[in-house]
Picture 1: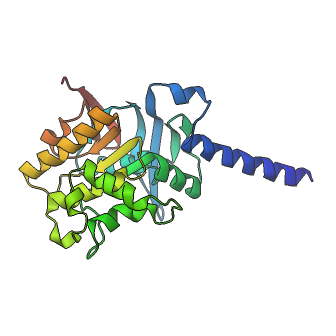
Picture 2: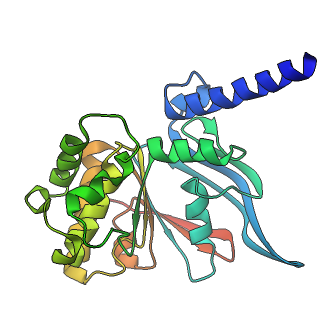
Picture 3: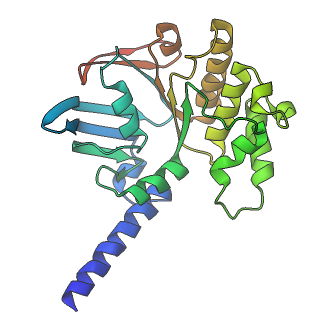
Length: 259
């Protein structure tokens, strides 16, 4: 009976952790200014007997409603840090608090639940389904949702990025900039508090890049969405309020930008 009680208690604690992560929490950290707190995080990849340290003690805080750019050369660890911040991976050591909940040690199912509720993702290659309409692509995160307003929510998300009139067009009928707008709309479908954008303008020309960044600027300024921008382009990074420079798995410097 004691063993069963211990297992039940552990399961209950696990459920409470996710409930706090995806809903209201009484934890004092939830009312703190920072939505992201990373403390002395490391990430070590093991390939046989070889160990590669991708992150070597990163400490970072991101306030609610802040836009932060992460820059660094190839191999600096910025993609690894992005994956940890996006709950796509767990650190080897260190602590990660997301919106008042320590997520460093959560299981895969719990992390997936948090990603679905808290975080929207935008990628360089758009990651849209081919030969599928813009509307269907935006609806994808709602595939397993029981809600009856999927179509309405998806159209509203497309309208937020100025593409409501192109909702019935297939992705191969859209320009690169329009495809990225669809990807941004998809990231907004669950009303995330955080958007993580990985090289979102990497496949776009300079004019279209500025149009896409204007959308991020507006989401950050008007809706107070926290945006983490991973980029190697200095002019794109300067849309943020702060630039974090990574090198060899550590934060080399931080640059606060004036509006």
